[in-house]
Amino acid sequence: MIVAVLLGVLVLVVGGCACVFWAERGGPRWARVVATVTLTASELLRGSGKKRRRGLDPNSQGDE
View 1 (tube, helix red, strand yellow):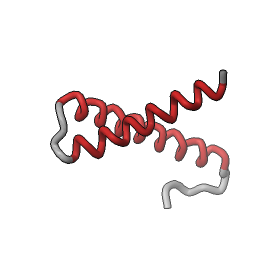
View 2 (cartoon, rainbow, N blue to C red):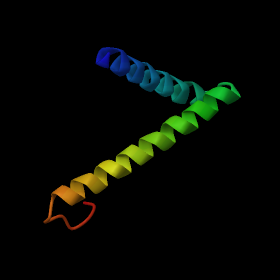
View 3 (cartoon, rainbow, N blue to C red):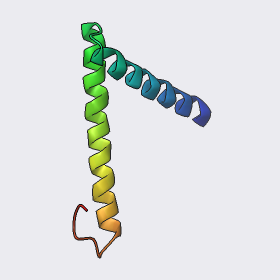
View 4 (cartoon, helix red, strand yellow):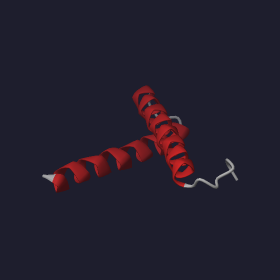
């Protein structure tokens, strides 16, 4: 079951990356929407990772 979930996540990630690539080259509207969602999710995950790392390192002074 876990393999199916991980495979599904992998398919979504690869599909999102393909839509970002396609949208940059003037793809259809739906590809641009999927690309926007993919890039937004990427930014949210990146931001949460920075917050988590800051919380783990008590000597952190902010972004370097």
